[in-house]
Each structure stands twice: as structure tokens, then as C-alpha cells.
Length: 243
Picture 1 (cartoon, helix red, strand yellow):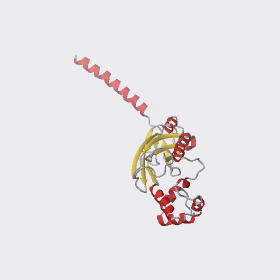
Picture 2 (cartoon, helix red, strand yellow):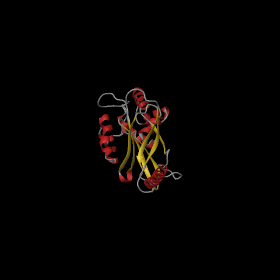
Picture 3 (cartoon, rainbow, N blue to C red):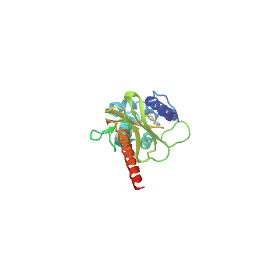
Picture 4 (cartoon, rainbow, N blue to C red):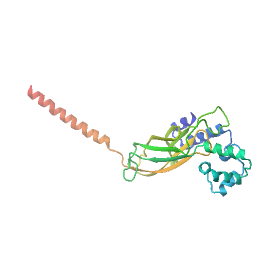
């Protein structure tokens, strides 16, 4: 509920921080705790080991092939086979989502979006493995299914442009509409996919939006109205002649 309240006021940064707070509450941890260490039986040295092995994030570790994943965990100090299976099993159930997008109705160099109008953004979300059952990690509350927020915004002015709740079981395609900036030009916008359950698995993408001149609908409508009035007067004259 709280993210929607701040989203209604178009506060991008505050909305994202509230979403992050939701993750921390579900996982029962403080902001300074590494997402790696929320995985049961994960050794504290995993952070340094992942850095040394060029694993940049928790999604990267999730996506790592099993044999290499086991090798990394062994180097991090996991010696017990049962602990190793617990960690790899948990990681296999966690989300690793690929985000792709396109502007189907303008907003590109070839087809600029009209200023101050509304255009759709189509987003395709695909998990590396199909979702089964409840959330793989949850330290507080009743067992829940994982959900996501899809957010479109402008970081440069801290403006939230669109927000949508989504569920990703395998592959999901959704469309959100957002308002185009009022001035023509090139803009950098952000897409955020934010978990309502897990820490460290969020995704971010940037895309370029090309904005052209606003559509001149009002002037065209006025011209049409004027022509309609002239036509009406001429029609009345014809009727009077017949009479």
C-alpha cells in the first residue's frame, strides 16, 4: 500500500526506498546485510569470494552453472555436502529475471513521441527457471508468493511515470502507459523491476525516449467546427428556398 501512496505523488526515489523497506521486513534484516548472506547456510566469506571470481551480484551467482557454483561455494568455505546442497537448492529456486522492452507506438528517432502525450511501453519479463511454490527465502510473516513492482521513471528529476504490480511464473509480457515530457528532445528513462520479497535481485534498465512536437489537435478541431457552421448556414438557406 505505501509504495502506491508515494507513487501517486510521483516520488520515484521515495517509492523505491519504501519497496526496499518491504524487502527488508520480509527478510528480517538491516540494510547493511549482504543479500548473499540471506541464503541459509551461506558462509560470510562468500562476498569476498564472489568478488575474486568476478561474480558481481546475487543474480549472477544464481545464473552460474551448478559445477562452477559449487566450486565457488567450496572456495568460500562450504565443506559440508548437506550445506552445499541446501545453498544450491535455495539458489535454484530464487528469481533471476531477464528484462526486455520496446516502444511499440513511437518514442524513437524514426518515430518521435508527441510531447505531453501518452505512449505505451511493452516489457517482457522472463525467469531463468519457472516459479514453483512459495518464496524460497522468507524470515518473517506467513509464507507468501513472490511478487514484483514494475516501475518506469526519470532519475534526473526524481519523477515516477508508471507503476504496475506483476507476477512472473515463467514469462510475462505487460504494457504500461506513461506521460511523455512536455518539451521536445532526447530523454533517458529507467525501468525498474523490484521484488516485494527478496533483497538483491532487482533489475534496472535504461532506454532513450525521443520526443517531438506536440500534436495540434485543438487547431484542427476548431477548423472542423468552423467548416461545420458554414455548412449548416448554407443548408438552412436551401431549405428556405424549397419552402
